[in-house]
Amino acid sequence: MSTRLQVMKFGGSSVGNAECIARAAQIIAKGAREGRCVAVVSAMSGVTNRLIEAAKTAQAGNGSGATAIMDALRTQHETALGSLVSSEEERERVRQKMEAVLTEGGRFCEGTALLRELSPRTLDAISSLGERLSAPLVAAAVRELGLPSEAIEATDLIVTDEFHGGAEPNMDRTRGKSQTRLLPLLERGIVPVVTGFLGASEQGELTTLGRGGSDYSATILGAALDADEVIIWTDVEGVLTADPRLVAEAQSIPEISYREAAELAYFGAKVLHPKTLRPVAQAAIPVWIRNSFAPDKPGTKITPQGQSKGGGVKALTAIQDVTLISVGGPGIVGLPDVVGRTFSTTAEVRANVLLISQSSSQNDICFGVSSADLQRTVDALRREFAQDLDHHKVEHIRVDPHIAIVAVVGQNMCGTPGIAGRTFNAMGEAGVNIIAIAQGSSETNISFVIEEKSIVPALRTLHREFGLHKSAD
Ligand code: ADP
Ligand code: ASP
Ligand code: MG
Image (cartoon, rainbow, N blue to C red; front, side, top):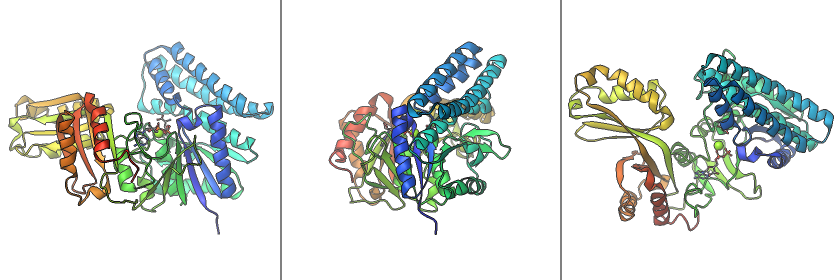
C-alpha cells in the first residue's frame, strides 16, 4: 500500500529570500518525513515582474538594460544560495544549474533586442525563468536538511495546449508523464521540487499557465498524481473574508467549498489563481491554504461541500483591473445575434468575461473583462461588427476602465432572502453608485459594478453589514 501523498506549493513570498526558502524547506522536510511529498515552487517574489520588464526592455531595443536586470537576478539568487548551502562543492553544482538558466535567458533577451520583437512564445520562455531558478535553490535547501531532493522542470510533466501566456493542461497526457517521472523518485525517497507556472505543448515548446499560475500547477499535479491533499503555502492565514490589504478586519475562514473559493478567485481574490480548483474538483481532493510564516496555524480547508453555519455571506471580493465594454445603441434592437456574436468573439480571443448585464430593451449589452484582455477584445469586436457600425445598426462599442467589480459570495445565500436588498441598501447609505448588477441563478454570488474610487468604502461597509469582522463562518 502506498503512503499518503501531499503536493505542496510555495508562493513567491514563501520563497522570497534565503530565510523564507529555509522555512519552506523545513515544511517540505516535515511533509516528506510523514509521507510522500511533491513540492511546487513559484519564482522568488518580484522576479517574474522583473523578467517581464527585461523582456519588454529588450523588445524596445535596449539589450544592455535587459542584461542589467538579468545580472541583478543572478546576484539575488547567488546571495540566497550562499546563505542556504554550506558546502562549496554543492554550491558550485547549484550555481552551474542556475547559470545555465540565466545564460539561456540572456540569449532570449539578446534575440529579442536584435529583432525588437517579443512573441508570446518568447515572453513565456523569459517570464518562466524565475521558477527555473528557484526550484534548484529550494531543492538544495531540502538537501541541506539531510533529505534527498531533485529540482524538476514542469516541461517534463505538464502537457498543455499552445496558448502562450494562459495555456490549458491536457490532463490525460499530464497524468501519464507526471506519474512516470515522479513516482519512481518518490519510491526512492527523493523529494521532487517542481517549477510552478509552466508546462510544455505536445511539441515540447515551453508554455505558461498565466500570472499567478503556480497554484494551478499544484492542483494539476495533485490530480495527476491522485494526491491525498494539496497545500498552498502563502503569506496569509488562508482564505480571508476580504482582501486584507483593503479591509483590515478581514478574518480567516476555517472551511469553504470549492464553489465559494472558485467564485472568490474568479472575482479577484489573489490568494488563488482562478482555475486552481478545476483539476481537483472531480476527484474531490481537499486543498488547504496555509501561512508559511505561521505554519502552526490551520489556515483554510477547501472541500467539495464546505461548511456553513448559516449566515449566507461568507466573503467579499473585488477586482480593479477590469474594464466595462458596452456594445449597443437603439439600432441593435431586432438585430439578430448581437449577443451571440459578441460572446463568440470574446471566446475566440479567450477574453476573461467576469460579468454580463443586458438591459431589457436590448439596446445595450455591457460586460466586464480583465483589463489585460481589453485591447484584443475591442479589436476583435470592431472587426466582427465593422459592417454594422458602418450602417449604424450598432452605434457604439464603448469602454470604461475606471470601474471595479465587487462580489458578495456564499453558497448559503441561495434561499436566504434579503441579501441583495441589504447589499444595495448599504451601498446607497455609503453613497456608492452602482453602475451594473449581475446575479447568477445559482445565487452563490451577487456581483456589481461600481466606480473604481468607491472600492474601499464599498468593501468595508459590506464587511460590517454582514458581520464578517466578528468571526469567520
Ligand atoms: P503567493 O505569492 O503565495 O502566490 P499571492 O500574493 O498570489 O501569494 O496571494 C496572497 C495574497 O492574496 C495575500 O497576501 C492577500 O493580500 C491577497 N488576498 C486578496 N484577497 C484575499 C482573500 N480573500 N484572502 C486571502 N488573501 C487575499
Ligand atoms: N511566478 C508567477 C507569477 O508571478 C507564477 C506564480 O507566482 O504563481 O505570476
Ligand atoms: Mg499567487
